[in-house]
Length: 210
Ligand code: SF4
Image (cartoon, rainbow, N blue to C red; front, side, top):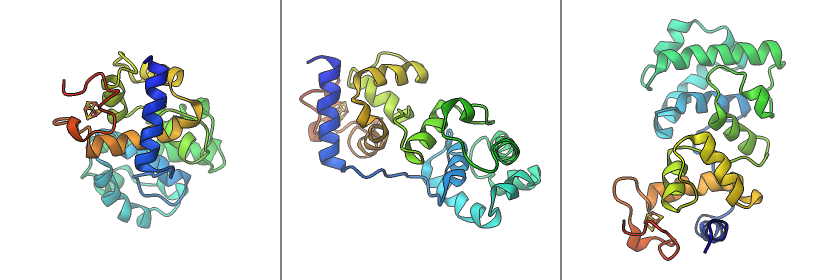
């Protein structure tokens, strides 16, 4: 079985297991809230970000509110998440740029998204896939680890992994791949102790019980 065939079987089985709904684990009501939540989620769990954004989005009700925020106050509001100082600075910078350059809208193209402070390819692809339905592969920690285990990439660099996955995954599966792999990584292919015996991919996984 070559990489493309393995990827196709993996995609089909994950679809059977986890369905076809686009589940976004970070709570949000609109594009800019998701963007801010994703900026905050670097090196932090989605659960922690959701706790913080619950109050944060009640206090800052618009992008303009974030653009006008006092940095020390915002740092204090998000201080329970890692790297809160850099994240507060990026949130304000992103909100200012969205208001001044993009008329308060979150752009859908990668090039524009990447000009926003604190927005890298992962964040940009979350927005493109989940908000705009643009085929895009999000490479997070689960996708990196499990794609390596499944032999779909041998790279370490997220951007190279993204390109490797775009070559082997069917395009219509790009958006759901990240969502499904997160579900797999949280329940079965757990980083410290993968439950290989229970895994629905064990017969095609090159890392089974390794
Ligand atoms: S067989 Fe084991 S290593 Fe392979 S995907 Fe399943 S849990 Fe992960």
